[in-house]
Length: 101
Image (cartoon, rainbow, N blue to C red; front, side, top):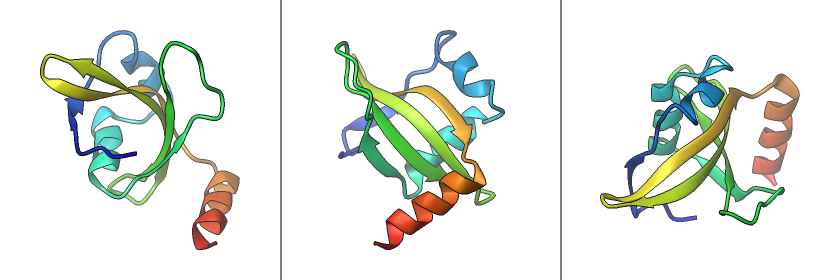
């Protein structure tokens, strides 16, 4: 997935509470996309829109799992986070092993 056409983020009362309930801050989520982020199609697609899974790293080195979609606006393409949470140790271990192969 190429994020070159993305101009910002789409936050509102619909998606922010779902992301924030796991203790992840907006700035952390946004910074993951500025840093190196690993993106894959969501394995549970829905018909309305394409969703993606991202694994990124916040400023403290914690890995964050993010489900998001791309929405078009008058300004251009926006990343719309759907949910976000810190990854558990087992998930981080699996991620690191996949990354090595």
